[in-house]
Image 1: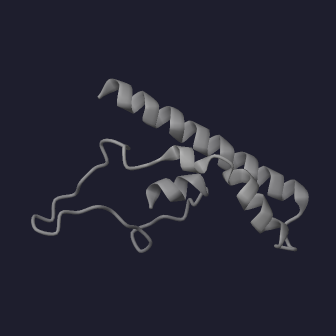
Image 2: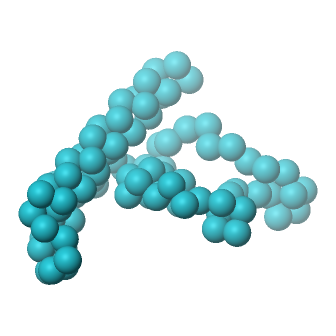
Image 3: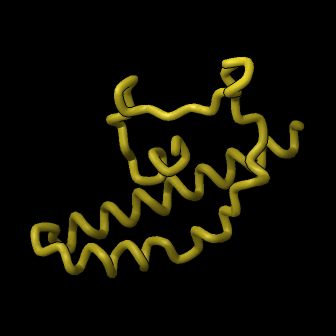
Length: 90
Protein backbone atom coordinates (compact mmCIF):
# COMPACT_ATOMS: atom_id res chain seq x y z
CA UNK A 1 0.00 0.00 0.00
CA UNK A 2 2.80 2.41 0.84
CA UNK A 3 4.45 1.71 -2.51
CA UNK A 4 1.20 2.43 -4.32
CA UNK A 5 0.77 5.61 -2.24
CA UNK A 6 4.22 6.74 -3.33
CA UNK A 7 3.58 6.02 -7.00
CA UNK A 8 0.29 7.91 -7.06
CA UNK A 9 1.62 10.69 -4.79
CA UNK A 10 -0.95 10.04 -2.06
CA UNK A 11 0.22 12.19 0.85
CA UNK A 12 -3.00 11.66 2.80
CA UNK A 13 -1.84 8.56 4.70
CA UNK A 14 -2.59 8.89 8.44
CA UNK A 15 -3.54 6.65 11.37
CA UNK A 16 -7.18 6.50 10.31
CA UNK A 17 -6.09 5.82 6.74
CA UNK A 18 -3.07 3.56 7.15
CA UNK A 19 -2.10 -0.03 6.68
CA UNK A 20 1.00 -1.76 7.98
CA UNK A 21 2.32 -5.27 8.26
CA UNK A 22 2.01 -6.71 11.72
CA UNK A 23 2.52 -10.25 12.98
CA UNK A 24 -0.94 -11.39 14.09
CA UNK A 25 0.49 -13.76 16.72
CA UNK A 26 3.08 -11.50 18.38
CA UNK A 27 1.67 -8.09 17.33
CA UNK A 28 5.22 -7.16 16.34
CA UNK A 29 5.50 -4.50 13.61
CA UNK A 30 7.35 -5.77 10.56
CA UNK A 31 9.43 -3.54 8.30
CA UNK A 32 9.94 -4.15 4.60
CA UNK A 33 13.57 -5.15 4.23
CA UNK A 34 13.61 -6.28 0.63
CA UNK A 35 11.56 -5.68 -2.48
CA UNK A 36 11.91 -8.97 -4.37
CA UNK A 37 8.11 -9.30 -4.29
CA UNK A 38 7.74 -6.10 -6.30
CA UNK A 39 8.16 -6.50 -10.06
CA UNK A 40 8.92 -2.96 -11.17
CA UNK A 41 9.14 -4.08 -14.80
CA UNK A 42 5.34 -4.26 -14.65
CA UNK A 43 5.35 -0.45 -14.41
CA UNK A 44 6.78 -0.12 -17.91
CA UNK A 45 4.34 1.95 -19.94
CA UNK A 46 2.23 2.83 -16.91
CA UNK A 47 2.23 6.49 -17.96
CA UNK A 48 0.52 5.63 -21.24
CA UNK A 49 -2.09 3.53 -19.45
CA UNK A 50 -2.79 6.29 -16.93
CA UNK A 51 -2.94 8.88 -19.72
CA UNK A 52 -5.59 6.83 -21.54
CA UNK A 53 -7.65 6.68 -18.36
CA UNK A 54 -7.26 10.41 -17.65
CA UNK A 55 -8.26 11.39 -21.19
CA UNK A 56 -11.76 10.29 -20.23
CA UNK A 57 -11.75 12.63 -17.21
CA UNK A 58 -13.06 15.83 -18.77
CA UNK A 59 -12.06 17.94 -15.76
CA UNK A 60 -8.35 17.11 -16.28
CA UNK A 61 -6.76 19.08 -19.10
CA UNK A 62 -3.84 17.86 -21.22
CA UNK A 63 -1.21 19.88 -19.33
CA UNK A 64 -2.32 18.45 -15.96
CA UNK A 65 -2.59 14.93 -17.41
CA UNK A 66 0.96 15.17 -18.77
CA UNK A 67 2.24 16.42 -15.40
CA UNK A 68 0.56 13.54 -13.56
CA UNK A 69 2.03 10.98 -15.97
CA UNK A 70 5.49 12.58 -15.79
CA UNK A 71 5.41 12.51 -11.98
CA UNK A 72 4.31 8.88 -12.00
CA UNK A 73 7.21 7.92 -14.29
CA UNK A 74 9.66 9.87 -12.17
CA UNK A 75 8.53 8.16 -8.96
CA UNK A 76 8.64 4.72 -10.66
CA UNK A 77 12.23 5.42 -11.76
CA UNK A 78 13.20 6.55 -8.26
CA UNK A 79 11.65 3.42 -6.77
CA UNK A 80 13.58 1.27 -9.25
CA UNK A 81 16.85 2.97 -8.28
CA UNK A 82 16.05 2.67 -4.56
CA UNK A 83 15.25 -1.03 -4.73
CA UNK A 84 18.25 -1.78 -6.95
CA UNK A 85 20.59 0.02 -4.55
CA UNK A 86 19.01 -1.73 -1.58
CA UNK A 87 19.50 -5.15 -3.19
CA UNK A 88 23.18 -4.38 -3.81
CA UNK A 89 23.78 -3.55 -0.14
CA UNK A 90 21.92 -6.57 1.28
